[in-house]
Image 1 (spheres, one colour):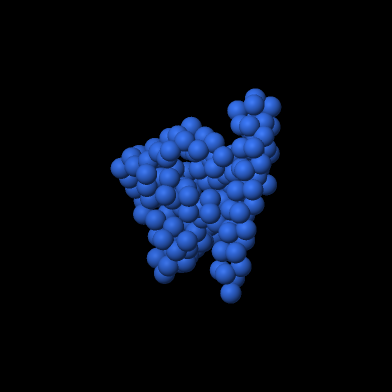
Image 2 (cartoon, helix red, strand yellow):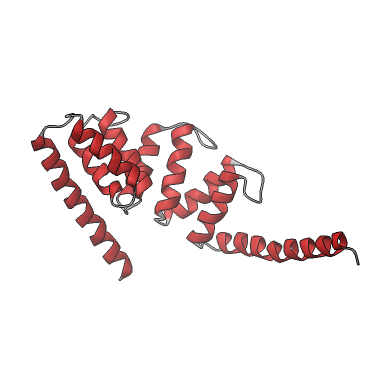
Length: 184
């Protein structure tokens, strides 16, 4: 048997092993498993193993989002923000980003913080924006860099920075409380 034939057979075996996983994923998603719904929605979002399809991505991400999955809320928010697979709706996007941010999703915290800093979709609030960047900086170095730029650029007064840091502590305490309640 040639090396090419062995490689072809091995490739077919590997592919056949992936098929049940994909079928199993869809079955689990259809049964209401939010992790499977997120994974399936993400596959449609990225075109990973399936044709890229934002409408299907939105369908599965909505199901996971409705069950409180923060990653699904963040991705679905992006779809609404860009009008991909759903009508463009900045308010719906921000609502979803906010839900995800309030569960500790750093990506969503960056988006919400940016909305407050720029006044996009919400009334501009530098202290609230700074607070969300403080939260995101726990997980993301890029958020920490933005905080440094804000502080060094004298965009906020020392009083506003202190207020933002206090607000971030309040938000973090709320996130931790929700996480503890979810574990019960």
